[in-house]
Amino acid sequence: MKKLVIFDLDGTLLNTIADLAHSTNYALNKLGYPTHEIEKYNFMVGNGIDKLFERALPEEEKSKENVLRVRKEFVPYYDIHNADDSCPYPGIPELLSYLQDAGVQIAVASNKYQAATQKLVDHYFPEIHFTAVLGQREEVKVKPDPIIVSDILEVAKVAKEEVLYVGDSGVDMQTAANAGVTACGVTWGFRPRTELEEFNPSYIADTAGEIKKLIL
Image (cartoon, rainbow, N blue to C red; front, side, top):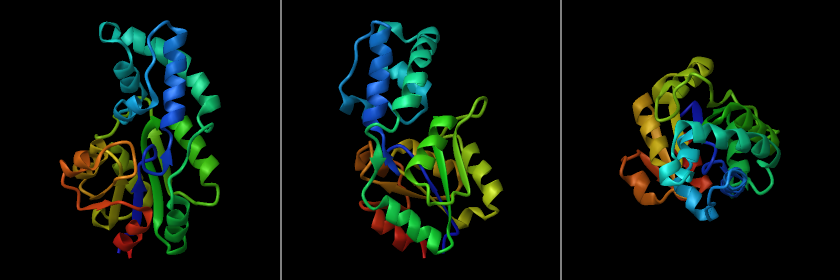
């Protein structure tokens, strides 16, 4: 039995791609840069917002200074609009309630900046008690560095073998491997199954309901 399930947020618990795309396009447009179609953002997200902006900028404009300029426009806009079109994936609210009722601890480990991570979790899952909700924090390395998992384990007080890490990308599968915990890839998120398979996770789930069987 697993005593703790750590979930990635974007592409795993919530479909946030439209709000991320609209907000990044707003910032790019404000600064006079070309924008992108929503589906292009599936392969830009996952490594934190600075990497998102670097990928979204034109090749010749990918400087640290320009990333910061985009960030300055993006954050205030996204803080207002990050729940416009986002929504939980099918079966996720039921899965979280099931885990909570079964006495399994639940946590979030995201590369989205901390304030937005906490806001979205509070907004979409107000009935769920999370042991920890961690996003991208200043001066803390982002996933796939395992520090975020270590920080959650410190709060949860469980052993690594009692943990299931659930995510939709190669970054998540690497994070689980780096942290020494069991990985479950999910196919409903932003990245294709083939990306998950490259990292040989212990499990790949096509529906939220399948994860229940991996816990108890």
